[in-house]
Image (cartoon, rainbow, N blue to C red):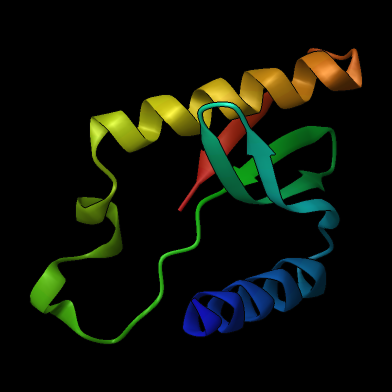
Length: 93
């Protein structure tokens, strides 16, 4: 768990250095969690952080299955509903 937070800290610093505005970390909804939520200009970005150098478990994109993707998207829609906005958005890994 601690290692996951370290990777999320690195990801947040990276995004902030690119000019993103981080809105939330570890946003929980009834179906799951989103690691980082940020604005990239006018676009809302939902970020799933996958860290590690060990490729035995596959590339990070290969570790994101459809079930996890559905849960992330459900949380993304819930976040936007709570915001009361429907901005352009994307999911980054």
